[in-house]
Image (tube, rainbow, N blue to C red; front, top):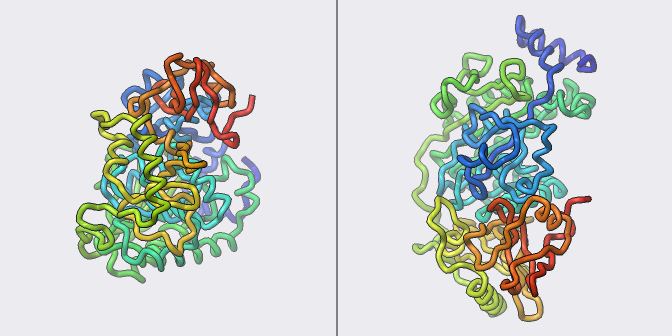
Length: 472
């Protein structure tokens, strides 16, 4: 690659010294490509047996694999079903270092397009709360679509600037990810536009913005909480120097060693200064990835045992008559089409539905908010938890998001498709079904739900959303 900016080349030579030649040689190699299994939808132990792709484990992400782009996993029905997420392997390290656990209350503050949010959700397994925020509305919609595709129930997607989030969620979160907007030097190998937009001045602009975002994150993090800061750039001003500044400005934080979280033999290394050796550096000339910087910071104090807005049962009553009427129709739907008991598995959306009662009605749309979520009043919300469905002329029509969250074992009727039939369904075509099926039927491929159909006389009318249908 000969079109790298001269100022970037000079700085990297100074920064890497004798390793600079190997670093620049990495730009002549194919870009790294990976996918991450979604434990809400797919069993990781079965992926090598069932997925028709060449997969190699990523050492720093238990759900991550290197894949071959020429095999086009992004065009497969299982991708549309949310069984996995296409993600650059270096980026998987951020959530691995965050180490989410079921029950955590987490914010992904700069979340689009959703790679880290969906990885967090997979580790939460439906327990706890994820608030994913994106300041730009178009990107927030993409984030919301990816959350839906992956069948996530306990995620609220917001479209707010960081300072507004800080006002709404003071000292609220157990863990926060700041995957900060940066100068994008780790994108050079796969994005020509990133090269054209780079300049030393842009690095300085990014560093100033990152400080503002970190200040907001501090206001949102509960005492004892964990803040993970990351970039996909190599600039010290945005990485090591940013962490040094933060620790000086916020002495109630300490930098935690990545080696206490990730395997010692995963081929990673610490930051470039003595003060940041506990941070994490991923270099494209030392591993198969585009590069990343990640730091895990712990705030002093002890996490609160519970948040005050949750009552003893973790329930919130429906207040309005309109919501109650909608719930009656929804409950009729559940009795007719959903199983009564969740399957014996590590995760079941039926268990989540039974344990949450924070229903909220937006117009004719019924949502189930995660019970740990405070009021959404005053927030610009793109997705208020799990979209259950729509009230239409005194009848309940289930949402596509509900179908994506369900598994075949969760419903009374499920039409399992072969590969060709699944593609036909995803294109919006009518498909055949079991002649005994009537009305709402889940459509699945390889045990992964794709969406709804409506059955009559052995024919399944397609209810896959038109805006998501794949082109012929």
